[in-house]
Length: 217
Ligand code: ADP
Ligand code: 5GP
Image (cartoon, rainbow, N blue to C red; front, side, top):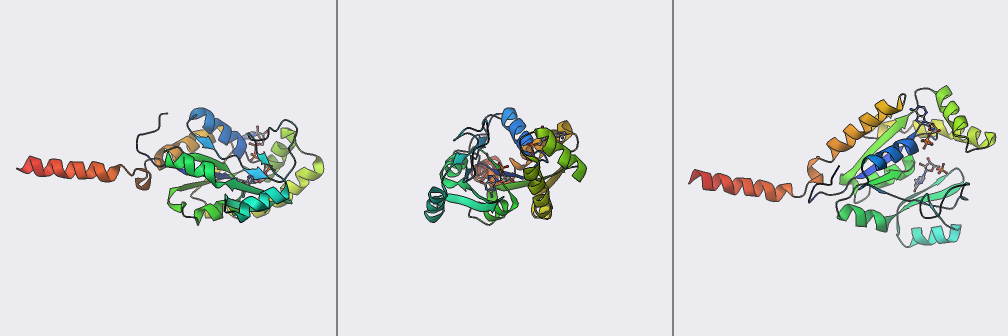
């Protein structure tokens, strides 16, 4: 789908308890619209096998991470599962100023910070719920990425994450993946037409008004 001329970029935030499917949905959304820009977070956690520095995350030392926070270079940051995570500001500003949407896969703490930042008028926040807790556990296990004790830790954190569901603009229950993805595309398509996302409308409406005046003469 092409980007419309003269459009402001949206900050699209996806949050969910770990395992509900937000990375899968984010990946599909990026394939659907390659002009979307993914916000690559910085983190102090170690890379998992297969993760690439600069693509999956920017893997930083704790002191490098804290320097970025001190220098105001993070749009938001949070402490999750014993590690620091944050969204670097510069690529986000650059993308939205050039009319590209930015996709964030971040937790509720980050979502709240962005929703109260100077960019709040351009935020679209979506929370993804699992159809059941048994299915959430099944997905975490079948993903095959984490040791049993890490899965247990993620399950324990899920309740905390889920309790913030009502702070989001939209909530999707990710039962059937295709259905959820269709709903996600509908939300993004509609939100792109929200008035604050179309700064060109002011000039367009002025044009219509002068056409009116000419028409009346
Ligand atoms: P998150 O990013 O929220 O931690 P993932 O996107 O990694 O979750 O999904 C966790 C696992 O569940 C993955 O193996 C993924 O393929 C699977 N999954 C995602 N959505 C669904 C769905 N609707 N039905 C069945 N399995 C799903
Ligand atoms: P993981 O270690 O599984 O990649 O991510 C753990 C959690 O951290 C997920 O809930 C993920 O959404 C969240 N997370 C990842 N990057 C960021 C970020 O930049 N900021 C915030 N606030 N949370 C993040």
